[in-house]
Length: 329
Image 1 (cartoon, rainbow, N blue to C red):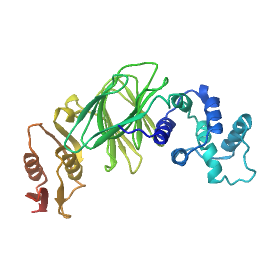
Image 2: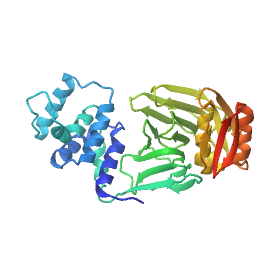
Image 3: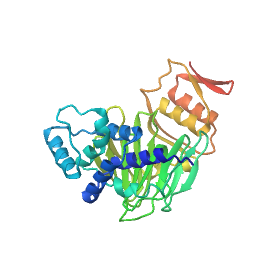
Image 4: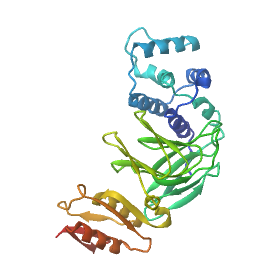
């Protein structure tokens, strides 16, 4: 468990900036921001979100900001250039003006709720229960951050890596999973979310219920059972696909399912799941060919590699100093 007061407040703020709610608490949020000093970390969190918005900061936006600031007693500088120090005071208000709220209610719980971080190392998986009894299975090389007490409006968590969620249903309090490139909003459902920072794609796969996926550029897409959304982290494009129930990721049972995956993506997964490392010849094709294959939990890394070598047909492997070496034939 990690608990640092400044870090907790920053994390709470950042977790909520990407979600959209009614503006009923807007004025209280603005007043809180006006009366309280903004730390460098909070400033950076607000600035990064502001910069990621696709909405242009035109004259209308600044006029709206001026009206709000007049109401709560903040004076804008007369010059058009807004200095960074001033921005630290009003950045979050800018964000509120484009439709973000809900921060204040969450920060009310600041003194009671601390941020908890659970991690699964390479070669292991973990199962945890959240404060609302939602069950989460963390895949190898993944981490989950969540508050010790959820707010009154939303249940929000932060995922790095891959996890399977079985969410406790609560119609009045949505459950939101935020990753680097996507946010997934649900009420009660079962789904898998794969969002490793070193991979090119973020993948959401729905088993039961319904989810809504939103990107950093505010693209939205709803999924129904046995649908999979693939988001390209580099091009910001979405691709939807209907999949068979047996193709839903089943790593928590020890099985490995790959669908249209490159050899490089498969090797990355094997490194995490078995806590092994590869030294790969640069001439081996890791990215152009795609493979769809399933491995059972009883299969060893050596058995899996033999199958991959037979499929790809262009490499052999050996083990040296606890490292697996792949060479071109």
